[in-house]
Length: 328
Image 1 (cartoon, rainbow, N blue to C red):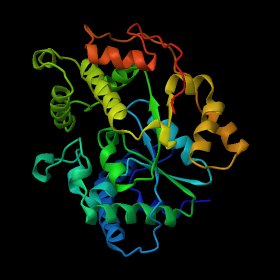
Image 2 (cartoon, one colour):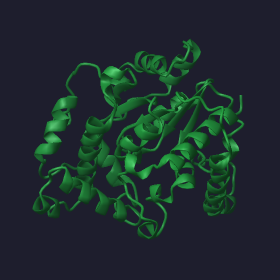
Image 3 (cartoon, rainbow, N blue to C red):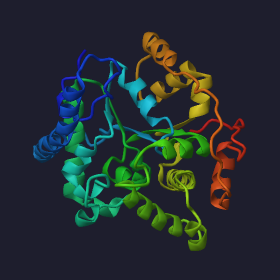
């Protein structure tokens, strides 16, 4: 079934190669994307302001949490293909509709007080109610039973999410920091252009996390910046996520997901309260292909914070992965 709420989402899959659309037409579509984004933000501001007294106090979405370039996108797309799930892929317009400070991507972030890390102090009762309404309306418009949201920056906003949605569930995915950082380094603008603002924010978080100023001054490459970002993201997840005993958090490593795709997808689906769907799990697991092994750049040094967190997740500095017990 086509998602009736899809028209509210300005993000679309990347234009496929040989799609038949002319280059000029695709350029026009790309040029119109910011217009569509502003329109979507406006529509969601209206949804956030609409009364919704019938929203159950225990209703909440599921959040897909992980450092950027850790496999969040492919995992979200796989669940987005489930007939009972509406998947919101980085709905920046939705967050921005309630609080412009969540927008660290658009130009002039300083003017609106944007920042990476946000917590319960950034959501007063009015904002909390608006967040709940806009998420609830998106779920209702879709006609699906479960709503899954993915925005990688949310690793630094778990305390905000927990405050707004006390009953939310979480899918947490990890990936080896070398693969994450190499992928970040290949992305144009990840730490330049608008990404320069993010690196300034990450540096502040790193200082608060125990990184030394002189050590950070020696970070010169995007690979090294990516490893710092991974370290901070893992620290934020470990520190701010709900207790594993709550039963609302389930964790998977990207490497394990590739090794046993069907088994892990079915485990994650059960966590979301989805009914068994062998056809979906079979088709979804078939889409997961192990990446081709290849050499890449190596960091000149590792910070002790990074090595500690790598060890807990079963990751070694040589790029290998060891078995660890399953997360909650």
